[in-house]
Image (cartoon, rainbow, N blue to C red; front, side):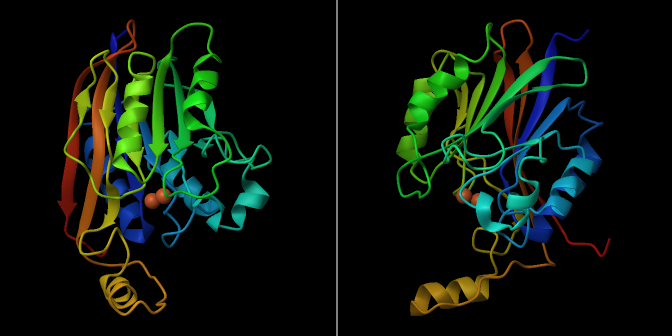
Amino acid sequence: MAESLRVLFFGDIVGPLGRKAVKKYLTIHKQADHVDFVIANGENTTHGHGLSYDHYQELLSYGIDVLTSGNHFFNTPDVRRYGNDMVKQVRPYNFDKDAPGVGTNLFTAMDGTPIRVSNLMGRVYMNGVQTNPFYDLDDIIKMDDEKVIHIVDFHAEATAEKRVMGEYADGRVTAVFGTHTHVQTNDLKLLSKGTLFVSDAGMNGAYYSSLGDDLDSAMRRTITGMPAALSVPRTGKMLVNAIQFDINKETKQVTDFKLINETYQDDPS
Ligand SMILES: [Fe+2]
Ligand SMILES: [Fe+2]
């Protein structure tokens, strides 16, 4: 049995071009690059807002193993009906205790290796958080009797808060990846005690966009200060943002890693 596991983590998937971009990347790379496990933030998958049950199933069919979420979790009515059935999704752990779904879970890679995936949300410029994400992380880590591979999606606005979460978790989890700001940052690194960290994994969606949203409506809204319906482009050049990393199954630590920042021209398929 191989001693290491290769994992892909995609930043926020935004709208139809995000779905198309991730599908294309996985079709080309998943087998060719020997990827064992795939995680993606799906909070903006359905028209930029939330993750419908149909799109949840669609993303899993591309070869994604686990979806994480964020502040847009409640933006689809499917959450109330199917939230507890979407067992391959984790939503922010620090939502209200009555929120559907779970904030952390232990999954299994194809070879049987357990992988914990947790989703926590920051408190700076974010709404809906009910508990302290740092103390919550302590509680989550205590759930496992022995050290397991543990990937944390920290969905937060402020870079400083994300960096502090990386430091707080350093040496205790395998990786902390920031999401939510939709712009991939150039600070992917191993922290001093071995945890892999990036401030933001970026986004998958329309290349010519504002964080995945249609540029015309984003500009109108921002420049005039007047409301304008946001929409997501359906055609055009696509952006793929992810992190690929290898984990030693014994130590649960990352041995190799790289940022993925690719573009695809749209095609009619
Ligand atoms: Fe997002
Ligand atoms: Fe978000």
